[in-house]
Length: 494
Image (cartoon, rainbow, N blue to C red; front, side):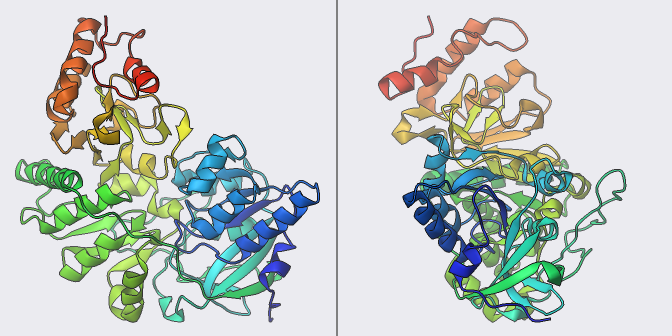
């Protein structure tokens, strides 16, 4: 069976207003890059003619500007789930022009299969290769592609020649049964393969192939600062102390790391530490720093959901795929983020907080409690189920005008019951086995910027001797003062 060759505009004509459209990818890696632009162009024409055109957009996680960006600019997004990081889409969400449903990434595929998000009308899947029998070789990510493709009424393949067919063997495609028929997820070590190297799609559903040659839109990370470097050193020091104290096995445990500048700084510090042995990763995103640590031998194997690395490093990996396939594996997010597997393997999770409070609660998603930043992503999947969960963040933002540690988080994503340690550039707060008063004391003394310590100590004093010393009328006073004056410093609680 041969499939029709479509140009992007022809493919876009299959998408109509109010459809739910699933896109492959997890971050810009593996996301379609030419069909979404044609859909956006179609939306602009429809809007110019006074007709509505918005679609539900479902992906594995975030995407690049050629998907989330172009659709948001064209006002073509009815709703978006489960995660995003594009500035144009973020503005549309916070302006109320696009609805956003933020959810744990491991839950997406099961929720889709349940029908709770409605039917998938069309799935658009990026591939490095496709056979007449419907065997799809995915590119640099898996995400939710297996479930989206299976549930969709129609499938469009975006065949991207920027990704080589030699990727075969990098993926492990496995979709579990749903309850009550689900069996144990048979992953007992980081390297274990449980599925197929290709994704199979019913050929009768494939309506055509759109050819492209577009690289992943993965940007670089900021240069490491003194603050991010010190955060990395503090995390590494903490883990080395845990090994020395016998609280982490001497042979170490698999690492999960979030994405971004702090995560890269933490991985760099682990790589440089002589007290941290060579380790494995069971994570979502394999990013730039991981490749360097694989090259140095510090990372023995990395299991993830996407290969989200800068173009020059991706070329390096693609030029030596035979070697890197021995050190990396890409899985669906339902498996890479699976709580059962995270608990079984004893993952050490390391994620970034947008805001924390003095009792160890974490806000990962909302600025001042109301404006969405990106979403919770997979941090909850790992945090709640990790052997040891760590959150890290700088102690201040906006040049010191914001304390990232406050009396009470303006939005709650991870409760104090899930957080093992909080780390900033100032130090380490081990929160395990501590009461609320003790957690507040150790966070203020070790993690809060010195300029903010006196006013947070005073807040605790005003709370008195109750179990959790909150004063509800004052809990958000630092946030309110920032909104009024542009700084959280110098709050008077009386």
